[in-house]
Image (cartoon, rainbow, N blue to C red; front, side, top):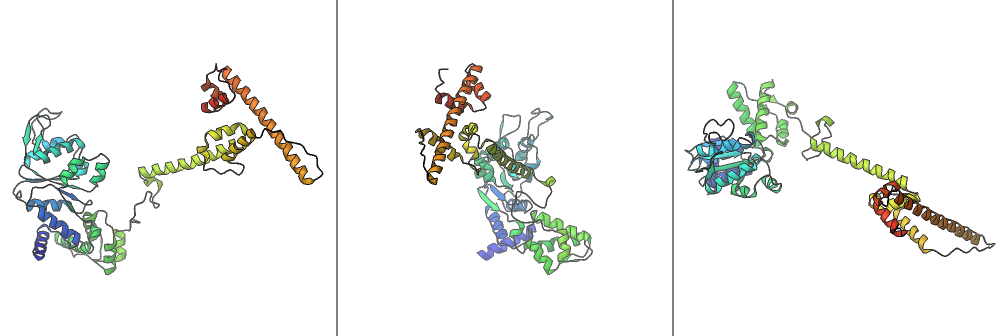
Length: 430
């Protein structure tokens, strides 16, 4: 049974000129052969240039619709304003420029197959119309109220992650599951191993036949280099490469050095936000945005340090630091920390007993005596500052007719801090 399937796969390859023998490629062809006799919807996924349209033709040619029409439509190439008219048709006068009735692709392709390439680019309003066709076989022309029937098989293809688009709200979830009844993955060229060498030879031979020249060939080193290349453009890129070398290369045997001039390395295969080999002029919009954000973060950190240094050590501004300590939590200070400010303030309020002056000939006692006197002076200074602070608050409130918002602005403190100070000094009834 497996030998029969393999022989059928080879026959399909010859019929549609599919070159390669990788396992992933053969599996995709087998799935296409199995689903072809049914009318189930098929979603073909794969990178751009991998050959997704060839699989839609395989499915159509092996189905009972093979004598009907086959139409391939690139959804990304049709403007959003006209795609409904293109797919479903329109009535005369439906919009400006509609001088007559027009049949859409779903009407023209009745009993046939429609291949919708780049289905991820389809507008959501059109997605709703397509869903109705898939579920009921019904559609309505633009500008009409009459429901029409159609018998069309839909094969869709995309090079984007539709599930991700569903998560972002760009693609209808119900349409996704309706389309992907049978999914087929077309492998990228870099996933097909030695197939890249076979394709290179095929394109070189085709070019030589068309233009009556000797086909080019690669040295062993050049073959290894070719197989290691990623080919983001896949088969389309490889074909263009072969034709370019065939025209420009004087020697028919292409060496590694010569191939590298036509196919240079593009850098790391890993994704990166910024390509260091590019100038600032070549940055993408996202790269520039990231750079601006990083610069802003650095500037904000420097600004926070500057403000902290300006406020640090000033008794009048410690309240500001205390109120906004979350802004300065990652800034080290050689003088003091915010938590230490709080502890010192608590100690000043708790220690109310006056220090005792002790006269002693002992040097240690003398040092303790000096410390006590200093502490007493700091305590008195603190009381004096509190008195002045209270006077300033009273003046500001009277000046602004007890409007605390404007009083806080005059004092240079937050309104929240002013409320706390008013409560602390019992100025509510002022």
